[in-house]
Image (tube, rainbow, N blue to C red; front, side):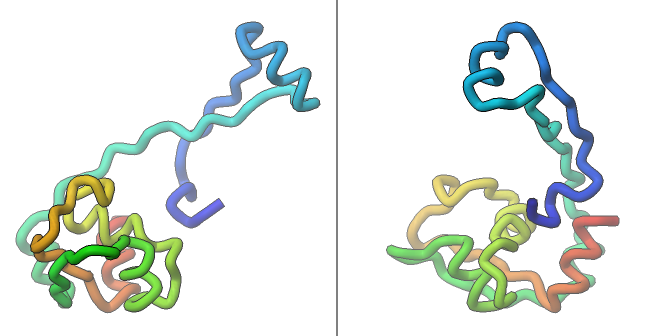
Amino acid sequence: MGIRYNNRRVKNNSSELYEDILESRDLKQVDHYRTPTFEQLTLANRYSVQNIHHVWSVGDHYWKLAEQHYANPGLWWLIAWYNQKPTEGHVSIGDSIAIPLPLDRALKLFYR
C-alpha cells in the first residue's frame, strides 16, 4: 500500500453479510481503511512551502504532475490535498493548480 495508508485505522470485516464473497475468494476477512479527516491548511502552512503554479489543461492528471515534479506518480494525492480538490473532476480547464515543493516539506505539512 502507498504511504498515504500509514497510520490509518483499519477495520477488519468478517461479517456474515460478506460470507459468500469471502468464501469465493478464499478469505477470512477484508480490511477496510477508515476514511481520514484532513486538516485545512492555514496561510502560515501554505507560506512554509514554495509553489509552482500549473494551469490545468486538456490531458492533465494529478499523477502526471506528481511524476513530473516528485518523480513518483503515487504522490498525486498530495497535490489534490494541497489544492483542496480531491479528484480531477473538481478541476476545470484554466484553473491554477499549486504544486507544493520541496517534497519533504510538503509531506511534513500533511503528516503534522
